[in-house]
Length: 514
Image 1: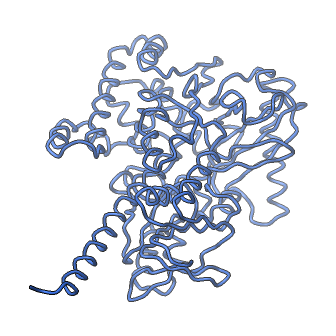
Image 2 (image 1 turned 135 degrees about the horizontal axis):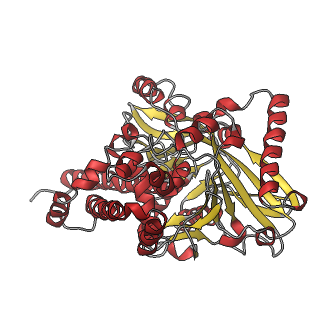
Image 3 (image 1 turned 30 degrees about the vertical axis):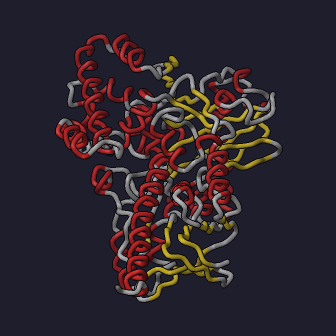
């Protein structure tokens, strides 16, 4: 059967969550994905008997919080096993490893002990964060009655002010020192920009999840989440087609009515959702549409976000045997975040800061006992990597060697334990996702491209939507899933209105008058 209620292009988390939510609402959906796996960045791969999680490091609120609600909306909450992390992250700071507490009060006390001259300012910062959280909750909650939501928004001044600030501005407004701000915002690299450029919205929403709702990993890794979403779609009567690249969005009367695959098959639907980049959606898939050409020009003028390089390492021992006990550790080498960012984006990788993820500590069941798996991650740009194969391979070998040498210096004997060393570069990200420049966060998460200012999911083409990291509300696991679920609710409302209108028209003209 080649007819569905909704067709989704791309099986990233935005597309999968949109299809799963629509399936939960009673619509028959189909997802078409060119890759051999569903999940986009939320996937895994295997090498020499080792399982590597492509991207998941942690999410906030997996049991009772905001992320748990997303799972419930997609009816996959019972298929996900949350694993509580001991710490959101750790940081090598001035020669010492500091574990960041999940509990807010413990975190405040840690900060006061480290920066005793700034205790009053620290209290002011955390009071501001509480006001930000209250405003965000009032703004985003759909369960509140209209008058309660309106009353909450009256108190949301802090939230709205901070949406116009960078992360650095939001923190330093309380008179805190640069050294404190660098320490407090050390996790910035996971959001793609240094704190003086990163929108406060994209730093503090995950922060709230980590410290108010708890930090978690998913048992089985990111692929377990993607597989659960696929199962939810299929169990509701939908389909997920892998190795099925869409070559065209079919239009009729200016309205999206279906998709054509690269192999020629055509599938029809009442609504089309694109979970791939807007550049490819408006360009390759809608090359003959006037409105799409105008949209392509507009989206191409926006700032694309950064990419990543990741070295996935399989070890002959478990990481703790080498002294690696932390779950997520920032290997801080450069104290200034702006310098760190510039070094990485210019390919001076040994000068900057890296993130080390210890998957054995987060999920001992991901690999067999005795097999260690860690990943080293840092920001990177596509322009740092040659396009020609010989030069590209040579640079991969050189960078892998640099990373291993630094790890050997930190953890003597490390090199002798390495069985697998698989380097993923921005070109790898681009090849597997088709994202421009290998971007992993969609558009750069600046103030000008954050929140309501980010690309809208509604398009100029009738019955065509966009979802994923490029669109509102933003990147990351939670942002991408939120985009899919929110758009699914809007589509369901629109299709429901059309169905009611159709029923009304049918009854009006078919029921005999008396």
